[in-house]
Image (cartoon, rainbow, N blue to C red; front, side, top):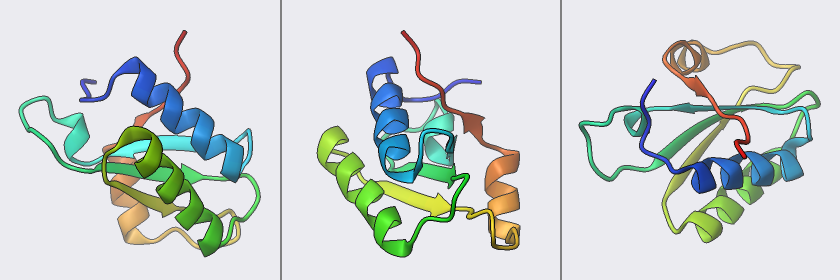
Length: 102
């Protein structure tokens, strides 16, 4: 699946998100960055932590990523103790799993 992110950007997203949300957090990319025919756009992330994270930690992930990437970032969190919303289901259905690449 194509995506408009460099390996360095992906590694930054995964390491930064996991530093805050936990080392076993699953990080998904969804939205316009998956479409190679589009330009610009924010980075839409769905993060699934193993342990519940607060709104404050979600905001911290967003802030850190925006500082490191110099791009707007939207962070959606699916905590393990909350029901899955229709929006999360839709986001995950068209998302690409992000993993660290050497």
